[in-house]
Amino acid sequence: MLRKKVIIETLLAMLLFTATAISHGANGLHQSHDSIADAVKEYLLQSVAKQNSHAKIVITPLDHRLKLSQCDSPLQTFSPPGGSKMGRTSVGVRCESPAPWSLYVSAKVGLELPVVIATRDLARGQAITKADVKLEISDTTHLLRGYYESVDEIVGRTLKRTLRRGKVVTPSLLVVQKTVARGEQVTILAAAGSIEVRMQGKAMKNGNPGDLIPVMNVKSKKKLQARVISEGLVRVD
Image 1: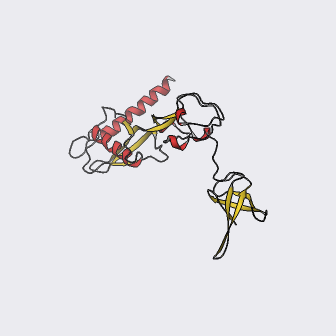
Image 2 (image 1 turned 90 degrees about the vertical axis):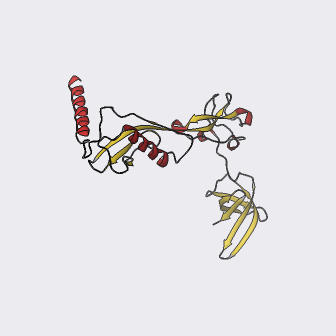
Image 3 (image 1 turned 30 degrees about the vertical axis):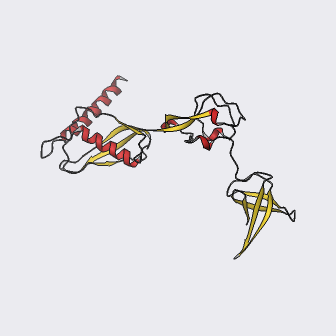
């Protein structure tokens, strides 16, 4: 273990020495760490946060011993292959002249947005009311299961599982709403070339756009297979 630690420290020292060695360019000046941090922040603001006013970007300070040759052209910034976009990430910074150098700078990107949370404990099977939820600012970086930014999106929806007070309402917690519900009156669209026929029908199964469901022609009582197009509209393929 001690030998491994010594090797790691030696490698880090060599990397620092190398970066310092190449830092002395023709002008003898050093690139300020603040300018590097500013370049990284601007890159993340443009490419990841998309100029979102709620974005919170924290740059990890560079080692004060690191001295890099001052660049005589704008610093180039880039993401490493497979690099993460939100949360903890890293950004590459490169200088081409007069003395080429490059390094990676660690950073953390958070996006604080108003998200819907429960104001009290809610039971499974309960329909959500406006009194049950509210908006609260939260760092969405950690909300990998999704979230809602509007109370109106979920009012009336039913819970599949118990939801505790203060917890974020996620899509997986809610019963999926169907565009067409079983037993609902629908318009059946049948088309052949330029000829289009519409008839009244009844959905025999729930369905969302793209789903193939059985429907019944109200007039002839004939059952057909139709594809859901939108709310109240299905089409016979």
